[in-house]
Length: 289
Image 1 (tube, helix red, strand yellow):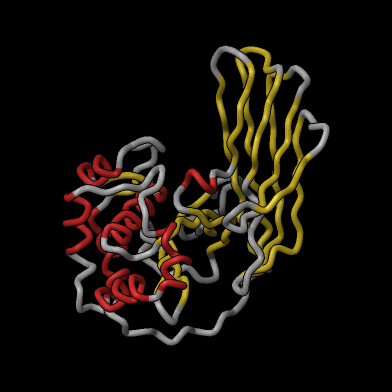
Image 2 (cartoon, rainbow, N blue to C red):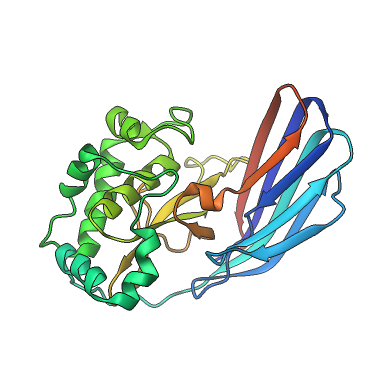
């Protein structure tokens, strides 16, 4: 599959902004699963310069600043991505308890994955989350199958409801109210896995959405997406989408990996101003036929 991707963020400020500093994390990653063949950033007002760096997790970030007075800001990111056909992995039947023991006994492996086993800014757990995790991640079940059971449980027992939560909504609230968005479901799944010693990381990206039958696809109707990646011994990092109860394949585009959303926020910055502001995000994931 090949896609043309457009991500547009528009800010409108009630008062003048005199200085703006920002970091973008929106460039799709190159890997054995996908290739970003073209990438372009357009910013209005135009910044003096855009600096590019690769962060600790291997994600490509772009930093820019605007020092002229402005009341609106538009950031448009365009990408061309090719999703590659990957060979199906041989499933490792290692159980949850065997995998946990392996992470403890293998020092080299433990050093590699430890950061994805610990609590992070948006991911922590309590007895209720541990109990929820144990309903799926039972000791003698294969880890791969157990993760499939976990994402199915989240998919069937939780309601996807935009606006029901925000980035600061605690996971215990998501678990209690049984509703949220892809960000919440990914954080919850990761918390479940880490609470039992299984390394899991947060994946930020996009998914091609399909319009209702016999209906045209609306421009700007796609959205950023989030899912999880779990380390399974002898298989490596394997991705799962709890929001859609599926294993990501041709329709998922990866932009970044991190411990949680804080590591991979698409666009974050600091403004020097006063008053309110509004933001509008439009995303298009268009398959190239």
